[in-house]
Image (cartoon, rainbow, N blue to C red; front, side, top):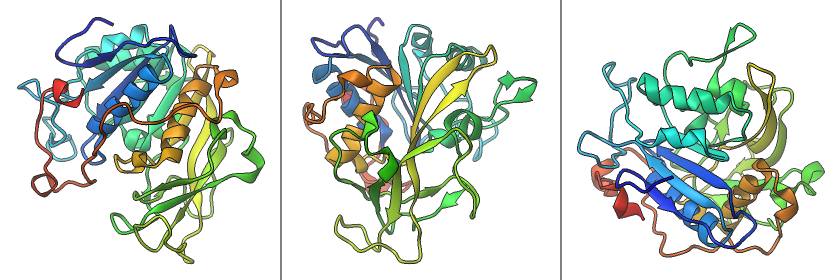
Length: 318
């Protein structure tokens, strides 16, 4: 995709991902995706050879602006993500969005991608990534992006929001799954999402890969919370389009900016991109998931002034 000051492009080089194009969408207000998606794009391009494009929700001044309101706060809000037409030629899209309301032409790009049968990948708030009726039907039934496409939507904080952390537990029966290759430690300071009612389970067709155990504090070695059972935080499934095409789906409900400081979380994210693209034979347990350049994510939250979250041009995140 051609370069533009409205988005970031990272040409791939030699590597297993050569010739594949991944579009990463950073468009949420809480978990610093504006920092983590460029970081992942740099690793995917420089360490693994994928061509990557990072798209952002921009304000009227053309700045990446995580402080923008959503329609839940202001019914007049319409978001703007320049470059969404790149979805028409993308091989994979990684969604990290929250409560988006898009203009019709931009939403059409999303719907066309979902109808293409190409793989779908969602991080954390992507499971409540769009507000309002989702303009897509399968078999005469309206599709819900979280529940139907990704396999679950945010119902509540199972952990204690901004007060505990999550230890990832590999599902024993799935230890041989290629997405888990080379992973032995997953931890992050975000809390566990509940995506199905108490006493329930993931929808039929979803395969849990990692469970998230809430801890009693925000440090890696804190003890598990004995009152909180582990819930799925990463799974795979198949999405069936309106025309019957089948698409691989990966969803992880971890993924705050600071979660990605953990190498296991990064490897999970990188391995999942390979799997989505049918390149699981190329996943090696010792491939590099090291940062390409500095990565110092701001903390999670909505207290923007205290956290230092201010509007910046896309180039500030390169």
